[in-house]
Figure 1 (cartoon, rainbow, N blue to C red):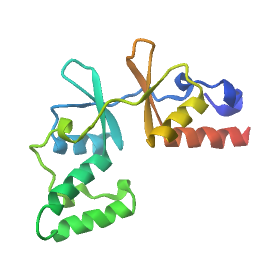
Figure 2 (figure 1 turned 60 degrees about the vertical axis):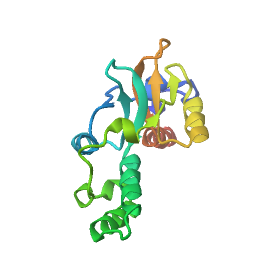
Figure 3 (figure 1 turned 90 degrees about the vertical axis):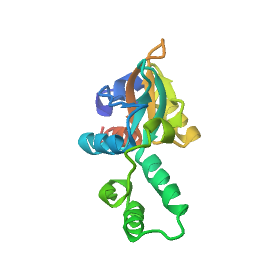
Length: 168
C-alpha cells in the first residue's frame, strides 16, 4: 500500500510489513548462515528452533562480531581479518565474507540475540517506529494475536513510506 493512497496515520504494521520471511534454524552453522544472507540478500533474520518457534534474531553484525572476538583473542590479527573489518567500516553490504575465517562448527544459536522484538499487526506506523527507536533495532517482527510471526518491517521500509508520503 502506498502512503499517497491513504492517510499515514491510518496505516498499520500489517499494511507495510514484508510477509516473505526468511528464517535461520538454531542448529545451522555460521557458514550456512552467511550463505543464506548472500543467497537472499538479507542482513538479518529471525531464528527458529526445531519446533518452528521464534527464539531469537541473528544479523550480519553478529557474524562479524563473533569473528572479531575470535581474532581479538589471538596475539596478532591476521591481514585477511583486518581487510574484512575495514570493509565493514564501509557498510555491512561491502563485507567480503571470504576474507573471514568463518567457522563451520559454531551454530546460529551460539551467536544469535535471544528473544524476538515484535509488534502486533494492528500497531500503528508510529508505534512501529517508536519500538525500533526504543530498542535501537533495524528490524522489527510483526505477529498476529496468537504471537505467530507474520512479517518483518525494516528501517528502509519506514524510510520508503516517508518518501512516498512526501510525494503525496
